Image 1 (cartoon, rainbow, N blue to C red):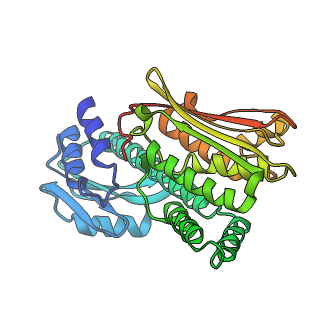
Image 2: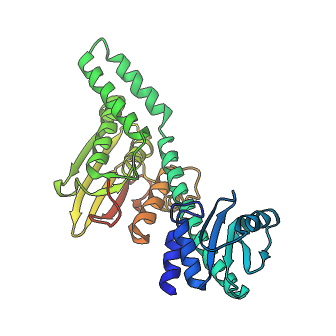
Length: 329
């Protein structure tokens, strides 16, 4: 019975309208030893197994009244997920009402889990869209202005920067999967830094080093580029004499460790903590976004580590497993 209940939860992962709803109905029938069982979603779409007379009529009645209905040996119960009607369970065969209610509870629990998982996925997608939308208009304007100024005097250089700009926009806004590779993220970083060096000139110095053994490591899409953008925008740009941004990636045992460091203006450690917690409106939402996504994928031990102090630069450390089940580009 426990195995059947576990499979029931898996079968309902896509809800009552999912492709395995009929398999879930079979599980209900097996748990109750019923003559027939059926599941309907709120549209009235019904899947049944076994003998289940008058099921469609009872489903329609429950959907209209949100209360139990029955006829002879057939009973239909509303399925309430977070106090909202999600569907109907129908059972035939003289099964005791208390047993049917227990199984209805199992179905509701499975639907609640599916709802939470879907909500988490939608939240992650929304956060990714938010990161894509965070491209600085100021940076775009400055980059295009510099490119335009070089069209006549240095046409080859202008062309290179325009291609870099196209790559940067394509990577930031294109529809990607949930994961990419360290190699692709580092390519995006180098493209962004090339554009920023054209804008800031000698004020921005750059060092990028990545070990070959971590290039193929799969990581969530857009977790490194926002960190580099923060280092330039919030660390180096405010300084009149500019500064250095260093990005390194290396293997440490079973982990891949990536560090983004600048010698810019830094910040109060308390402010950094508030930014990571998402409770500060003065910093970039990118840091909190990236930290939350890393913890959701790898667990609470794999969020961002930020080391900073006022007038002493900032170092952000990303540590992820080199191999993680289910994480692949």
